[in-house]
Length: 237
Image (cartoon, rainbow, N blue to C red; front, side, top):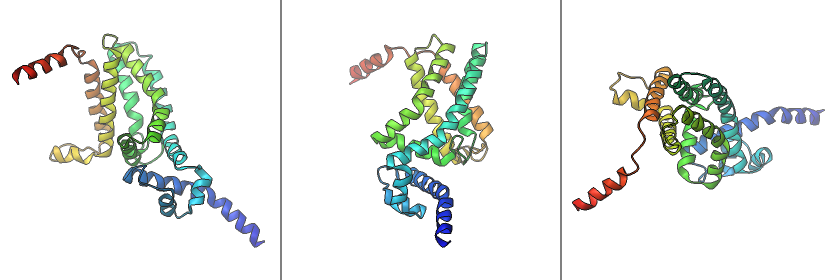
């Protein structure tokens, strides 16, 4: 009888233990990066043993992939739903604004839940992008590239006179602004001397959307400009 009770207790604990491991790994990766964190570190933070991490996720790589999947699956699906609606807008200006909002809104949809990730997962994404780990880069590409291509193509359809390569650059800047807005909202309050609240998600979305639309609509970069500036600098020296 005792044996049966123990087996039931263990079975009941498995989902909670799996969740504890995921949460511990996410916090450690966001704070210390992927390379510096070991399976033993994760197990200790989760109150588990290293074998439990291996049992549930096989490897540390598998654990990172699961963290991305559980956050980004819902976010990517929501982005695709909003993008499909945005592409049906007839007016090109309104369509562009709807496309940008379709990208931005899901990232703000949750402060701590799984539908976008909130600040901790956004911080983790920023750390993974900067760390240069090949595993993390592969997971990031696997998770986001298809959705990113869809948004870039949609923006290009709305702005056909802008080269696609420039839209890639500008979408890159949008992603950076989105990261920073989610991770350090207090900086807005500090630099505005309290006149703006960086934690006001509604205002942050409006500011980010307007700035991004203006960026996408800016005239294409003159290809000869960089070489001309280099020539002028060389002549001065």
